[in-house]
Image 1 (cartoon, each protein chain N blue to C red):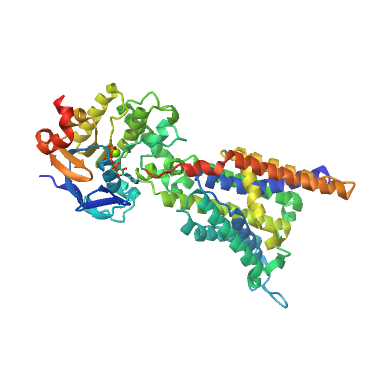
Image 2: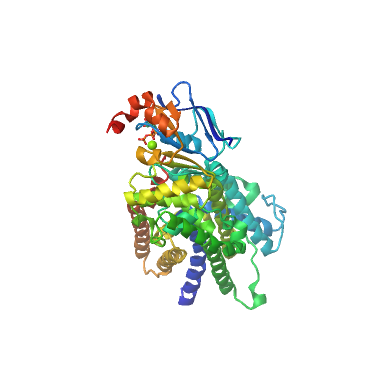
Length: 308
Length: 257
Ligand SMILES: Nc1ncnc2c1ncn2[C@@H]1O[C@H](COP(=O)(O)OP(=O)(O)OP(=O)(O)O)[C@@H](O)[C@H]1O
Ligand SMILES: [Mg+2]
């Protein structure tokens, strides 16, 4: 793999996954909500994009829906799908504290995963939907690789601006207050449930857009691509980035993506060397997990909001 | 004659087998608009629990609370607060990640708290006025030099005053204070007593839980005495001081001295 290729890949996926960590940062570090089903909102966006832009089924196709819409309608549909999924999953669960919310969001993501795996009429089951439509960048004189890279950068910038705008306002102040002490926030009239719900739902939208972009890049959506591993990946990136600032989580994500891509692009002389490299990668991932457990970021918020 | 702003009727709260408030028959009392009520009683008498029931932090086992004509059954504590009720907590509560100023600003009802105005930026014009109000509230409670600090630098007594400031900026109709003088140093207690009498003069209704009876009896106009969750007595400070039931059960030694 040449350097330019590596650079493009790192930047594209780095920004794409950063969109997710920035949103997760809003939900967790600021909103105090542990969403362990991140991949589901990503998948909802990717599938919505694929379904809206693909051709209607014909012949042996097992899926039922295809609207042959232009890419931008598919893109909007992805944001809406993720938003709806956040409403459906957030409404019943957001009253739960800390690790209970983590468990239920994780469960929702698993349910969506097995639904997509077994329900052929929506996304062709385990095969998935292939040949996903992509926008044509040649009209504006860009190669595909650069086009997607710039799209990912743009999406990340817009997401970061949105998050910053929310957090730097009285709204963000109220969100921080709710996370710090729910009871005290209620004592000054803050509608704790509304605030948490809104933050949860808003931050799902860019994740849906990222899903659409991912589907364009890979031109394939299948259950295999949307496993809990994606969720773990963005959580690790979030923790690496130190969890609090937008800049920090973006750096953490870029570092993790770079690490993975560099390891993946290494050239191995022997199968044995490749095997060793693979296990080193596993070990590193494991090590990072241990670091997460050591710092216990999850209990920090659970401890607060004890009974009055 | 002013009317009842707060009515507590047959209120009961049990924690498991423990009858924390209301005993078997329930606790009943009413508070007239504009009055200054002192709520006293020995440790564990159910004073804080009564506050938690009125402010919706806890659900009553039985009975009801009516605030300005609204039955508060099934009304969430944030909505009760929005009806004009302010309260502080026995253990001061602060937003630890926010500055002293922001802690007070959280108490304000800002136009920047709905997403539309956040996204359009419409809240910015109203913010300077709120900041001035917050600073004025902080000055009133004697924290004017701490505005930009983080709350972790504040002492227990200062946190208590911070909580008062956070309520002041909201302009509540009725304010419930749980042991406002505890841990507050004597020089500030004078300030606090002034704040409370001023709030009273402005027409606000106050209910104050205090163990510092000297402090309370000099500023309240009605005293309610609880004992083991039940109403022992109620009346003017003068009546309470001489009520044989109260003297026997509670005031005894303190006032003999
Ligand atoms: N959340 C709770 N769970 C169980 N028991 C409680 C709870 N809150 C209060 N109690 C009990 O209810 C009783 C009344 O407590 P409360 O805090 O209302 O008393 P208080 O009059 O405020 O006392 P103090 O002067 O010590 O503050 C006590 O026996 C207390 O242990
Ligand atoms: Mg108490």
